Image (cartoon, rainbow, N blue to C red; front, top):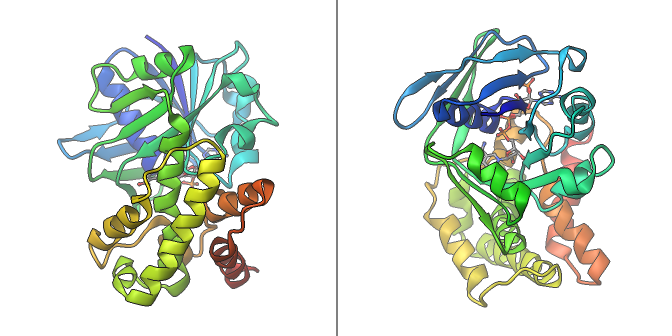
Length: 295
Ligand SMILES: NC(=O)c1ccc[n+]([C@@H]2O[C@H](COP(=O)([O-])OP(=O)(O)OC[C@H]3O[C@@H](n4cnc5c(N)ncnc54)[C@H](OP(=O)(O)O)[C@@H]3O)[C@@H](O)[C@H]2O)c1
């Protein structure tokens, strides 16, 4: 049994809460920034009403055994305000976010060895909800990958007996960079304000391939392993997606919300720069999206 705090109960935090509740042995604390009375998760199998303590201010929090961060990658500073109280007795912090910089992002606020980076795969979204109620729709299974090690194994054990596909892996770096390759391409539909079908166009597909090849080159310099065919596999997967589907970057842009462009394409550019690897297509995507959305 563990007392587990989830900071941010949108799509991913909601699904994680429902999985941990089905484990039947944990105490859940939901840390939110707007008043929340009910969290309801529609999983592929059933509707789950979450039973948890809900806190809206970090001052109300007390120590837990584990903290799961499921905010967007740009909400670092306000997310970290929860850590002082939640981690008062040394709780580890699992960061369930996209990108490859989970530890760097939270290093100013938490000891690096206490941060567990998590690569999440799960099609889930928030339904527009009434005041005080969060409705989450989970459209497929959740996969969670953490680095092999004591904390990684402890994290995986929290999900034992649930529907989550949680595993600690030796080569987490490769898992993370492969996911980033898929995420990198998402900048194109977001720029063009066109759903995924636009990637089937020849010229756009060629740009997507360049973006992925840059990501692979930087990922290899960071220690990730890719087959030479991987770039084409990513493009094929993108082209198999429903042509009217909208990725999260695109959805955020349409809704006027901030985008995780810095954690995705920005990370490729930053790390490419550090290794002396040119990343012109990703740099252009970052510059254009930032300029388009600058206030
Ligand atoms: N959705 C997916 O299918 C999916 C799949 C794989 C990976 N991911 C990654 O998982 C991460 C989370 O994504 P998501 O889709 O779950 O995002 P989301 O639905 O926008 O949820 C983020 C939640 O964090 C809350 N939040 C922000 N700052 C907070 C703070 N200081 N204290 C408490 N709560 C705070 C937001 O509150 P408000 O309700 O007030 O906005 C929101 O409820 C991202 O890095 C994303 O890229 C998502």
